[in-house]
Image 1 (cartoon, rainbow, N blue to C red):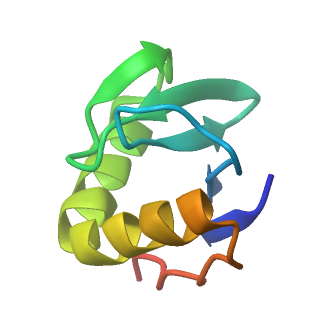
Image 2: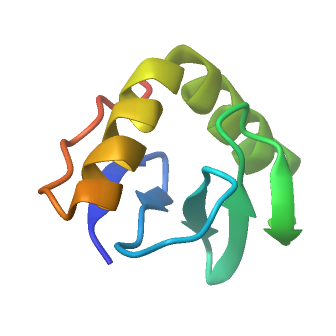
Amino acid sequence: MPIISTFFGIVIRMFYKEHEPPHFHVEHQGQQAKCDFDGNIIAGYIRSRTARSLTRQWAVSHRRELAANWERMKRGQALDQIEPLE
């Protein structure tokens, strides 16, 4: 599963051959969740409020790039890296 961004100990991935609705996977300190492109957790759990907030902030600021990667994934193309939070 390609890593598309990492920041502050948070790893963002997107699987190939995923199912709708559009989403990405986030991992922080061994915990995993699936998030929509607004950064809302739709499955799994991330305990850290800070990590959840940072993920949301990152997702909202990169919605276009996430959507573009989702389309690339559906076509079987390589995914682009997305800038981390700084």
